[in-house]
Amino acid sequence: MTEMIEVNSLTKRYGNKRGINDVSFQVAEGEVFGFLGPNGAGKSTTIRLLMALLRANSGTASIAGLDVWQQSVEIKRLVGYLPGELALDPRLTGGQILEYFGHLRGGVDQAYLKQLIARLNFDPSRKSRQYSSGNKRKLGIIQAFMHRPRLLILDEPTSGLDPLHQQEFDRMLEEVRNAGCTVFLSSHILTEVEQTCNRVAIIREGQIVRVGLIEDLKDIKRHEITIIFAEPVSSEAFKGLTGVEKVDTLADGHTLHLSVQGPADAVVKAAAQYSVVSLNSHEPSLEDIFMHYYENDGQPVKEASHVVH
Ligand SMILES: Nc1ncnc2c1ncn2[C@@H]1O[C@H](COP(=O)(O)OP(=O)(O)OP(=O)(O)O)[C@@H](O)[C@H]1O
Image (cartoon, rainbow, N blue to C red; front, side):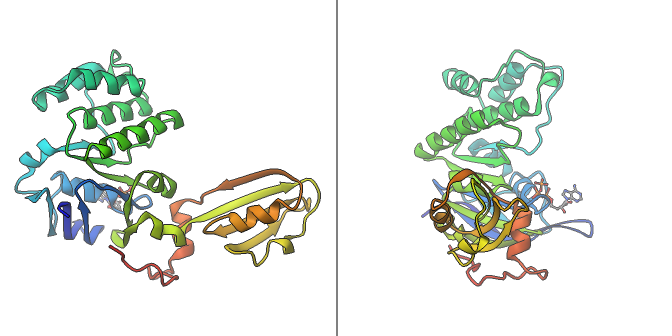
């Protein structure tokens, strides 16, 4: 398979502060690749290196076989880039900004542009200083997609988008992927990457700790589940079930709080033996998952965390 992105031992220091260290991974043409890591892990630094907005201290990276630093101008023609924070001229309207980006790209399909604007329900007539962070994100997404690039590099694309527009964005990703576009997107939310990507690299404290298929993330997947029952239920009924790592009973005796690793199937089936008032499940933050999963020295607790390609 042709590699669209190839990163080899890329290292960037900010003075004596860590940026990223010895980062390597490949993204094949046509893949939707997730770059997952908690805040400060080094996602934006890696992306800025790919876009030649920063220069690496050592290591190499290429996009479509072109060196990201030496051939950055050619690369810009291939790529739609959404930065983590988009710098916008406050006096221009959204429409004027899109027109400007369109000219830079040598003209874009106006019908497609209109379609993107409508799908994200974006109002291009307002001055950019009036846009909320969600609207700025929409503008950023539209300018990244509008010239139908071969590669999309998206830095936390859905941060600030409401759930409805997140869904629309997921559909847009699906469509460009079906059209053969390669997507590289960063996120600090495991479920988001799970829903949209086929493969993922996990970065932590500037280093890649894992590269693999989404299916291989099952062993780090965790849920915090709270179940309220109509009558008091003993925690013993849940201890020892597949995936259950911890069960706490709240003072009223009706409420159980469970930490579950992997599928929640056994818990749901056990809960169904009783009268359930409500069941609430949430995913802990990536920081919490990592705290549980990695020991202090950064070594994985579970042996399944090897690098899989
Ligand atoms: N311009 C800079 N000067 C000094 N240190 C920096 C600079 N930019 C980033 N860093 C540091 O480099 C590390 C990686 O930051 P980076 O922004 O790449 O992380 P991130 O994964 O994108 O996180 P976030 O989601 O918070 O943006 C952090 O420790 C950060 O403090």
